[in-house]
Structure formats: C-alpha cells, structure tokens
Length: 228
Ligand code: SF4
Image 1 (cartoon, rainbow, N blue to C red):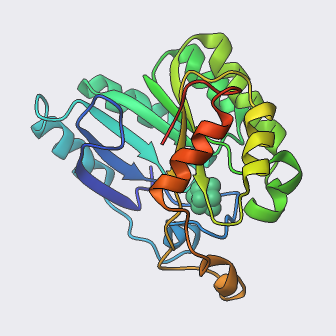
Image 2 (cartoon, helix red, strand yellow):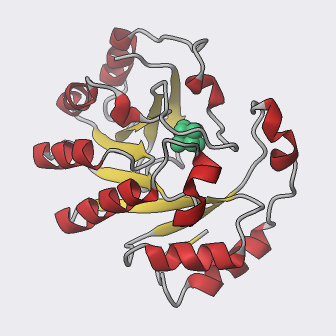
C-alpha cells in the first residue's frame, strides 16, 4: 500500500476513539477547496508500510483505531488486504470516502472489516461536477449511502459548507439524502494549496460558527441528526 501521510495521534477523526490517521494518495475528484491537494499530485511522501505496522504494534492499548483517509482510499486495489492487516493487529478501522465506489464499499461490508465510515456529500446533485470535477457523480455517493444504511453499520455523512453553498443548496442536499444517522456540517477553511484558476473562489469568507449552526437548524426538520 502506498501511504502518503501519517498522523500518529488524533482525538477528532474517529468518533469515540483515539486514532492514527493514514492518508492514501490519488483522487478521482478535484474539489476546489481540497485540503490534501498534495495527495492529488505526484510529489507526495511514500511512507514504508512496515514502519506503520511496527508503530501500530507498539501502540496497542494506547490507540483504539486507525482512520484510512485520502485522497480517495477506494481507488487502491489493495485496500481490502490493507484493512485486514490493520484489523489483524487489533485495531478498529474507520474509512473516509467521497462515496464514488459503492461496489468497493459493498465488498468491505461483506468482509465486515470496517467499523465506521465517513462519506462526503459535497453539493446539490446539479452542482456536483462544478464543485468536484468532471468525474464526480452525486448518484454514486447516494448509492454508497444507501448501501451503508441497508447494512446497519455505523456511519456519518459530512458536508464542508464552503462560502458559495447557500441555504437553498443545503435544503436541496438535505432532501436528496435519505434520513441519516449522523450528518456533520463542517466549516470551510481556506486551503494552503489550490489551483491558480480557483484563487477568487477560495478567497471568499467562510461562514462563522454561528451562521453554520443557523444553517444546520434550517435543515433539522429534514435531517434531525444534523450537527456542526
Ligand atoms: S474528494 Fe476529498 S481528497 Fe478528493 S479532491 Fe475532493 S476534497 Fe480532495
């Protein structure tokens, strides 16, 4: 497995767990606000997998889980094998995904090797390609979410509320989504690395926490489990 980034300890990436976070390179989307743009390019670090396994062996009892993030992890052919290796050491696993590979998620669910999933739903259906690039398709993500609901596994859906996402957009998204067990609205932060053509887009002021909370309240009737 190619591992392009590694955070040893996190209290915020895996609900209820102290976790390590692994970042896998490459993504089939191209969101203008991507915070891991270096993973979309070819100059990322390549961390030796055995180094990670050795670290996880040593930290048993101090860390509860491992988050596999990206980039888009489901693009890696050896993802299932890699998750099994981490489970065999004795860790819970959380997978972060843009939801573009419902068939891979089905395989992971069949193997029962992942304990928690976080799926990004990024924009209203009709704006998905504008925000995430030509390969993005909201229907794939909605299919992934539907597969997760049917399985009964623990998961959350997340939306980064970038400044151009309006209350109407969020209402549309809340309606397009099925009833979710947990829907997290995250604040937009300006990325350090971005495409030159997106300079104007990324400079917009983010919503304040107060405004974000108000937006969450506006969709609570449709998605009662929304949080910020
Ligand atoms: S899906 Fe995630 S990793 Fe991929 S471009 Fe969008 S924000 Fe970046």
